[in-house]
Image 1 (cartoon, rainbow, N blue to C red):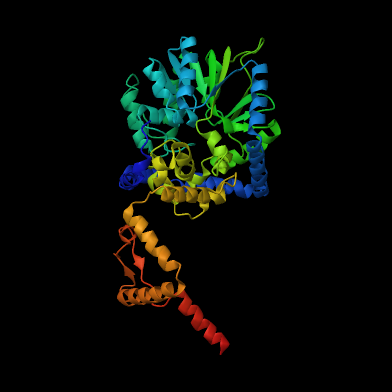
Image 2 (image 1 turned 90 degrees about the horizontal axis):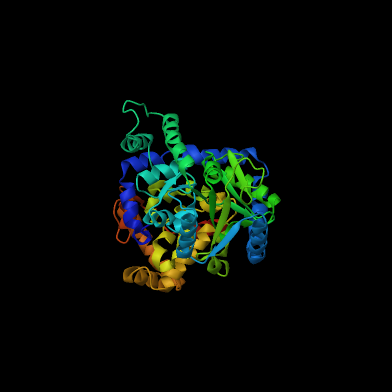
Length: 475
């Protein structure tokens, strides 16, 4: 996919003017946010569980090499073929080679953000294969030639009317007078169309929510069952997963699953949690004849050794973006790459480089809601702040921005000068804005006043008010 992280401001401006997008995003607070809150309130030990989950992830990352080797040994003992990929190009070529060996013409895919990260679909299609996304949301964005706008609900940016129109445009063999006004009708039509693809697929590709070192298993969590059909009906199952998805034991898995579903969709558990260990064995009623796992690094090792290590705790629940006021205003496509919201603002610059994705680190109000709801307690604002620092130290921000910060720093380091200028500025703004009570335009604040009024100050600084209060106390 094309990387458009540098143009975040332009993307966001376009998103704010998109009425259909704004209509679709209105349901976030009453949907996923409310569902998570209800799930949180039903589980008294939720906060303690977050601490346990964070500790599991930290322990795993400290010993990631050990657990990866353990997982590989147990996976191969169960019949899996394990492939290691240093970057996206290697991972794409490995998957293509597996598909060619299987003489694949149709490839069914479960939802996988890692496959989006490495642009796998386009690579397989360029080789002449038909690649079909089987998750409903992924299928919808695929037929629109779009990318997911959310890691859990890929088509959250669309309304039912838009989806119905797309189905009528694409599914031309179905009766024109069919009714597509409600969600169940849309789901039923997609199910009927995709069922043929499941049966025709030569290779099924899924991601992995977790990889269990103790058993050599891969785990997917879904609500539609498409993942099970993708990996069990095709003769070859390929798992594409990044190296940090390892968890030590099944007991650890159970803990993280309790956090994942509640944080993502407000469910106690997702409808399907499927653990796969190797290919079909003699006597198994179904399953693939071959089972491959492609383990992707793609910058994770560098993150593991650096100051962005905490980002690798992420279990991809999407809670941070559900609660983010910036994501809620512009949606996921504005972020310009695979991972949107606070997750993307912290992860994308780490994977792509700060010079490539620095604007995302600035796409935050630093309100802290993302860290507050993150089940792994990842300090997302702090990680974004580190990217901002790296961007500034690398010369980012433009001459005017850097000059303004230099002037501000010079004044802030001189308290007497700072207080003098603050008193003068607050008094002048208070006198000028007393009549209306707010400013519709201010120099150096056009970005703020373009969309909202700036309240006029009362005319005295906090230090002045505090000094007056202390004098009153002394008397």
